[in-house]
Length: 250
Image (cartoon, rainbow, N blue to C red; front, side, top):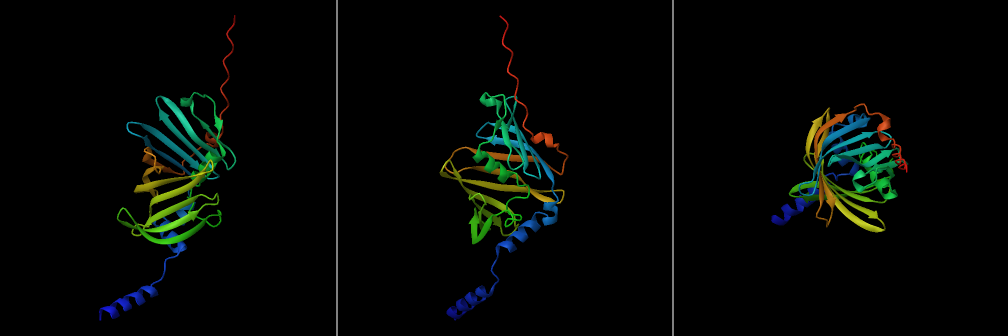
């Protein structure tokens, strides 16, 4: 009898419809507010704080617009640091006076690659085929006791992201990353949480990320999300270099 019951259970399981990538993504997009609302976002401003190691906390603002426009500003020790600005797919810069340079610098090719991924206002799951990414469903896996769909995303750049989506909420809870930096593979992970509704969209307000094997992690705590604020394109343009001081008269 036990054998027959077990055989029946296996037979029924085999008849259950298998999840597909597009079915999982459809539920994910719906949980976030729906594709129509996601695609209606033309700009976004995120205000919060970033914690880098013990006792190092700084106010932070991230601004985004469609067209690969991205800017991050951090206020630290009385200075405004701008570690990432993208003004379209081919132009990026940063301004880091804390490092002793008062002038903006162009982003390196690797920094540009990272910035372009971050600047995708919809996220890489939306319209992934059109963007040149591929996704493979790897089944379910527990993430700290939570059942999650596991998706392997190979980005157009060749970097890999493994996305874990809660089977109950259908929202991302963790993203593992594998990227090539200076010819070496670098692994990291990002934990997403504290989802809240903002103008009909469900947005994470806690982002905890870092490189595997590294003691330092960056924790972003978001206090305000603005959907479609007015952001001048000039915010993303590289500023002019500071004029060198005139030589002292003898």
